[in-house]
Length: 191
Image (tube, rainbow, N blue to C red; front, top):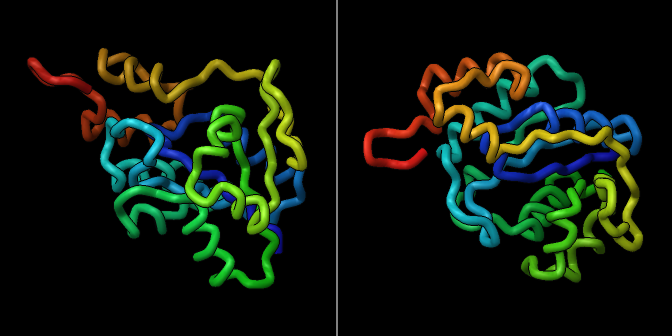
């Protein structure tokens, strides 16, 4: 079994995340892609939505998409999320599987700063989502995706302003965000 791993805060998950996951699955011949929702990322500031809300949005987004699976192990673990710990857990759970860690160019650039960074390519094959102008990652497989101008930051800003998220995120995710008023600014508060 070839198991793809796409981690992130998914705050919120959007169509570009799904395109990356599906493209990696098809281009790399992966049996499954786990979308690993982080509890807290040591190199990123706090999230706008709770870890449980972010996990639920990923579950809603991948429902009915063959080969894409929402994975909440990092949320259940709590605290800072370290990729090396998740890789160890997955290797123990799936000893015969080839693990493929899917990275965007931003994450790849930060890889040397990750905990036990030298261990990561020993534990999983690396795959880099190719973004125009980004340097290649030595030894990594390439995942080609179309240019996309979607960002979770822009989506949170739209939600905070009460604007529609249709077309930006899957419909069920838009309904979830709207129903819980996630990212909405409160009087005197922040999103």
